[in-house]
Amino acid sequence: MSSLPLILRFPALARIPRVPLGTFPSPVERLADVEVGGELWLKRDDLNATAFGGNKVRALEFLLGAVRSGDHLLTIGGEGSTHVLVTAAMARQLGAQASAVRWVHDMNPAARAVAERAARLCDRVTAVKSPLAAIVRASAGRLRGRTHWIPIGGTSPLGMLGHVNAGLELAEQVRAGALPAPARIVVPLGSGGTTAGLALGLAIAGLDTTVVGARVGPRIAVNRARVLRLARSTARLIHRHTGERPPNVSRARVRVVHDVYGGAYGRPLARASEGAALLHRLTGVRLDDTYSAKAFTAALALARREQVGGSTLFWLTFDARWMRDGA
Image 1: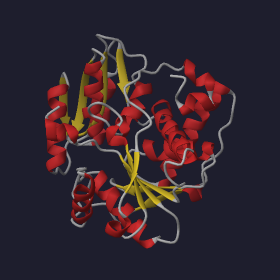
Image 2: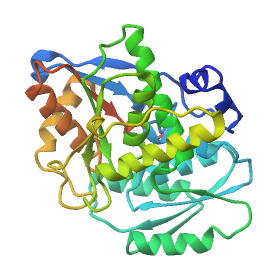
Image 3: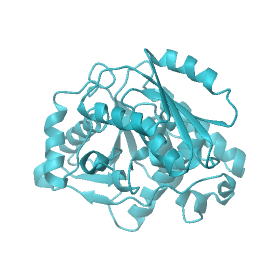
């Protein structure tokens, strides 16, 4: 626990329960400039756990810190939610049960695979027609005794501590010479926890890096204002536990790319297939159509356009290994 950059920076946070689910730091690698058309790096968070890795593992380390064998977890998400999948997988690892309320949305092959695997790992899945209906249904379930509520996407101040740690982790890798300080980091932007936590972690580390969120949901719920609010709420949590006030996340250090949204959550973006095929050819990594393929499309465009403006880092949040080996 003490080896986490977050705890080294804020020792008082060691009092917050946490369960080690991942292996950190996750590696970084550079893609061939001649193939990409610019300087583009990968942060391989798909490799941060033995199985079912990705960005959700980081939040769940804190969200599941108080979970014990025999406990019950409840969460919500879309039908093809990787958050639901990873939450259910980690619950089983801890000997707990997991229930999920999921709403229907546009699907794609990866989302269908996620949905099927999550259904097998969950002890109970309830299907509803909309996010609002999921919230209402889950509100009743949260009243059950000894039920641990895991918010959508793992996005809460507690869960976002894992992403603050990710930002500090990257700063350590930069200081160690594993990669240059990126001018920009590109991540999928859905519930906002990863983007907000990273932005706060980078601000604490003093890195002048812009976090670029590739929007994958409706603009009314997925936007920069929400990201900044989430970062402030996490900073307040850190202040309550440590007495220290983290720096504010500058509005200029958070950017949202809107042109990779497919028109509906889960709907594939036609032009993302070229980038996904390129990454697979170079690294063997498979992207999902809901999140990572859209974000990589944005990262690829930025790397090609900003060749004299510093390097671009694509934060790989989706672990496809289980789809290949049936884990």
